[in-house]
Length: 250
Image (cartoon, rainbow, N blue to C red; front, top):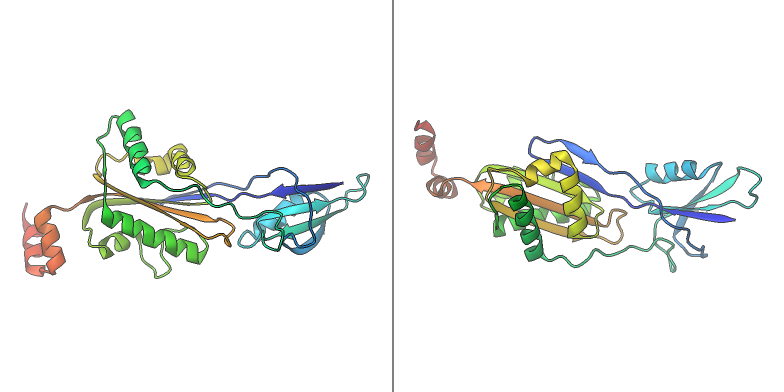
């Protein structure tokens, strides 16, 4: 008799006050076994849970597990750790659904309206900052607020020429659609705080996808409010004297 367990990975991370929330692994239905199914190592185990624990410990490469139990009267099992590759992968990567940013903005503003909040508008600069970070997380293979260059979300926003009075970030990995990641953020109390901030006016969001990564998709979302126009202009010019003058006013 054979059993297989597929692991789907997802993670949520937000940044404003820099708190984190993680979602765990889940199992799916049995799959058939092929000679070139993506198994990269085997281990002898005595339970499906032990096999899954090994996969979770190697989640950077393990996409799922297949268990072979030749004699059901004995606990001995063969755990096949699978990376989802090969000519006939048991756990092939699943591409995310096409992302419609206009729909994302509409959903977001509808959710804010349901909670008595004003709408936000799409910001090209916040969108670019989100795209930069989503692609950086994809290359790194993990979800984090810190870029591979050491940047924070506030650094990345300012690098796009957006000077803010407030900025907050949610990131996530593993969700295959805007609907799923948006729902996950809503259901996470800390992430939901950023969705329902009263002091923001602008919004940006992006997804990056790598079929060879066990997470697959990486999401970055920003909400922010800009500084006053005259302060932004002084910052863009690097006018230190003017900035000092503004900061000294009561």
